[in-house]
Image 1 (cartoon, helix red, strand yellow):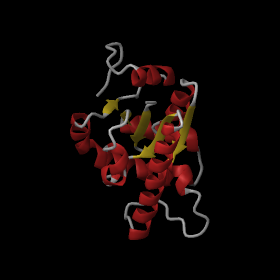
Image 2: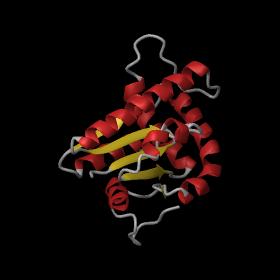
Image 3: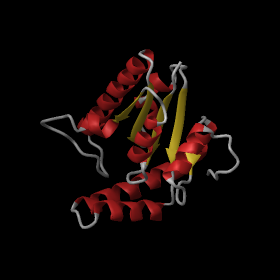
Image 4: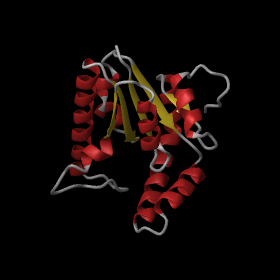
Length: 185
C-alpha cells in the first residue's frame, strides 16, 4: 500500500514546501494542504486566532475530515499522499480515522527553533500586514506544541529540528528516518 505522510508543525516552518518536495519524490503522488481546503470556504471563513470559536473549530474539523477522505481515496487509487497542516491540540481527534486506520501512515512534526520560524516568516512575509498575525500564530503553536512533543514522539511521530537543514536533507530524513546522519529532536 502506498504511504500517507502527514507533515505538521507551527506556521512558517516549511510544511508546504517540504510536502510539495516530498511528493515529487514519488512517481504518483498528491499533496493536500489543509489550509487550501479551508480557504475554499467562500462566505463565513473563520481564520485561526488566539481564541477559537465553535465555528472555527468546526471549519477546521470539516477540512481535516475532507482531507482524511481525500487521502484514503487517493491512496486506494495508487497515489502516495502528502498532507500538510498546522498542529493544534485537537489534531489527534480531528484525524482520528486517518491516524487509527492502520494504513502506511508516516507522521512528521517539523520543529525548528521558534526564532527560526519567526525569521522564515520575516523572509516570507516581509512588511505584509499578515506578518504580525503569523508571528502570533507561531508563538501560540510553539507554546502549545512544546509540552506535547514527548508524547508525540512516544506515539510514533518523527520530530525534526529543521533549523539548519536544507530541504533535501529534510526529505532524506523523512524517507529514511533511521539514518544517523541527521539530527532529530
